Structures are given as structure tokens and as C-alpha cells.
Image 1: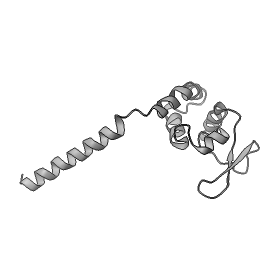
Image 2 (image 1 turned 180 degrees about the vertical axis):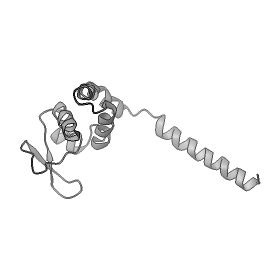
Image 3 (image 1 turned 45 degrees about the vertical axis):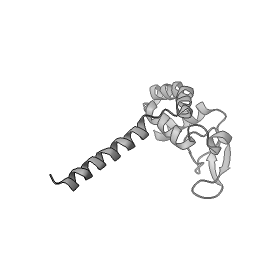
Image 4 (image 1 turned 60 degrees about the vertical axis):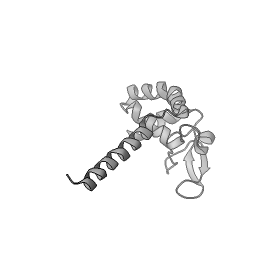
Length: 121
């Protein structure tokens, strides 16, 4: 193997290892707290509907910035579910893809988790 190609392979390996280390070795306390808070609800919903708890938690973390987003704070909506035409419950206006979109609002986070399971089924 020529020297430049060997250096490129070593550089590529170094970049991959660096990205992997930074992506998977950091434990964000906010994410850990989110999982601790909502794991029982996610497991209960998995038993009820078959929707995997890990999928629910991952989407909840992503959609809510681990429970810190403006939408989840004002609506308990952990999955960014919009109102659609058949929603008759409480609503909240929030700018997402467009200004002042209608999102579902829940009394409790557990209601959001249940609705998400039903929405997926």
C-alpha cells in the first residue's frame, strides 16, 4: 500500500472513532432524567399496544428536546402530534413547520403517551 493511501485510511479511522466516541459515550443528564421519568409509561403502553417503549422514548426525547421544548411545556404533547380535523380535545398554537399550527394539548404526559400509541396503531 502506498503511503498516502495508508495515511488516508488512518485519518478515516480516526474520524470514525472520534464521531463514535462523541456520539455514544456522553451521558446527557437531561436525557437520562427524561428516560427515568417516562420509562414506566412507555413500558405500560408497550404492553397495552405493542408499540416498543424504546421507540416511544426515543421519539419523545427527539420531539421535546428531552422534555425541555416550548411545545411540551405548554401542552404535555411529547410527540408533536398536530390537531388534524378529527381532534376534539384541547389545543395549543405553536410555530413548527408553519406559524401558529394547531397541536394537541393534554392534561398529563401520560395522556400524550397513550394518544401516541393509538395514533401509531
